[in-house]
Every structure is written in C-alpha cells, then in structure tokens.
Length: 274
Ligand SMILES: O=C(O)C(=O)[C@@H](O)CO
Ligand SMILES: [Mg+2]
Image 1 (cartoon, rainbow, N blue to C red):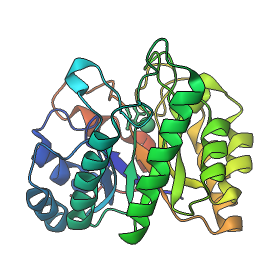
Image 2 (tube, rainbow, N blue to C red):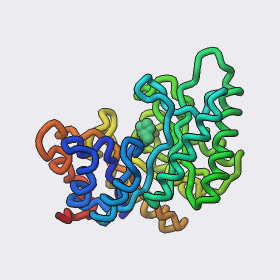
Image 3 (cartoon, rainbow, N blue to C red):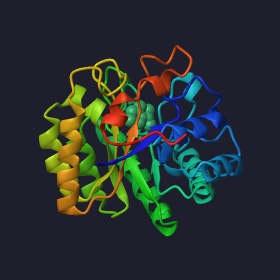
Image 4 (cartoon, protein in one colour):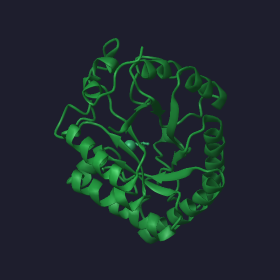
C-alpha cells in the first residue's frame, strides 16, 4: 500500500496549525505536507515533526502575493529575482525540515503575454531551481492544476509538465501527479499512472474525492483500485514516494471532523496510532 501524508493546510483545520502535527500522527499518518511553512520558524516545525515521529514530505516555495490572488511566480517575466530569493528561502526551510521535495507553483498566465514568453520564463526558473536543489539533495516539483479550482493557472496537463521536465533534463525536476486535478482535466487515471510512473519523473501523488474535493471515498473515483495500480506499477519500477491527502474533510465543520472521515485510510490498511 502507498504511504500517505496528511496535508495540514486542508486537514485538521479544527486545530491551530502547529497542533495539526499531533493530530495527524495520532490518526496514523507517517508523513505531512502543507502549502507554506513561512509563517513559523523552521525550528518550531521541526520540533513538532520530531516530537510526533513524522516525516516532512513536501511544501511549496513562496508563491508571490497569495492574499492578492497570486498562485506562484515561476512563469512571470520580470519576477526572476523574487523567484530566486523565494526559492532560496524554501531551500533553507527544506534543510531544517529535512524535506526532500519543494513544489514550485507556475503562476497565473497574465493577459497579453505570449505563451512562448511565459514558457521560456518558467523553464529558465525551473532549470535554475533544479540546479540549486540538486546541490542540496532536493527535488523540485511542478503540478498541473485544474482550471475550475484555479482559473488561468499556467499548467493544466500531466503531459505538458512531463514534456517540460524532459526538455530541461534535470533528474531532480519532477511532476506532482494530483489525482484530483488530473481526473477533472484528463480522466483515464489508471492508464495515466501506468504511463507516467515508470518514467521516473513522478515525484509525488496527491488525492481527493472528485468533484467536491472531500474525502477520497466520496465521489466518482474508486481509490482502492487506483492504490492497487500505484502499488503494482511502483513495485515494477521501484518508485517509493508518498500520496498527499489534500482534501477538505466533509465532516471538518464538526469537532474531530478530519478524524471522523478517515474510514478510507483504515480500509487502506493504516491503523490509528494515538
Ligand atoms: O492545490 C493543489 O492541488 C496543490 O497541491 C497546491 O500545492 C497548489 O495550490
Ligand atoms: Mg495538489
């Protein structure tokens, strides 16, 4: 069975951020991910990871002005210096958190800028980041995101992300296969897993029920089957990664809401710890 990481941006919102680590560990998660750690000192987060026996598996580089609606800056011409400074901060956090993966968000495509210009900027920033990350022993990830959740986002398709990774050719530049986004944009997930996992360019999976982004056992996808496909292909190609659980618990509005919705995790063979 794949290893599951709790996404602490979406799960356990019934607790303050630093208390979500204990809650995830008690529910049987062995890894965690989240969007951004930057509101907290890296040492304070590292302390929680250690105290609860958790691995930090992924977080995102600074995305520009998130509150103003920005969703990454890697494809934006003229923002290269800010991109580099932000990525250096991410690398420093990754060092303290012992985190092997950093997701670099592409950004929203600005109106009037040719696609070729955005792509060239994105590729140049990714190539630079991959070089920096390689020296620190980390992977850089890009993630195709569905246009309903994030209208105007630069990257929607797995194939496009793999084409970019292949063109840049850095072994530590990989693709985040978010099954929720991919089902909405592309479908045919089992065959896509069989297509992309053996390339060695899939750095991480994420999951959520489709279409509402709730628990994976709510909605149109049958995750037990997809887990078995991931297991089968991972055993064939030697992939050893994580699946980030990046969903909004449908029961999250009630006390203990995240834990109450983890029947799917128990069915996948993960017992509670606490
Ligand atoms: O939204 C997602 O899906 C993510 O994985 C985030 O890191 C980016 O918004
Ligand atoms: Mg995702």
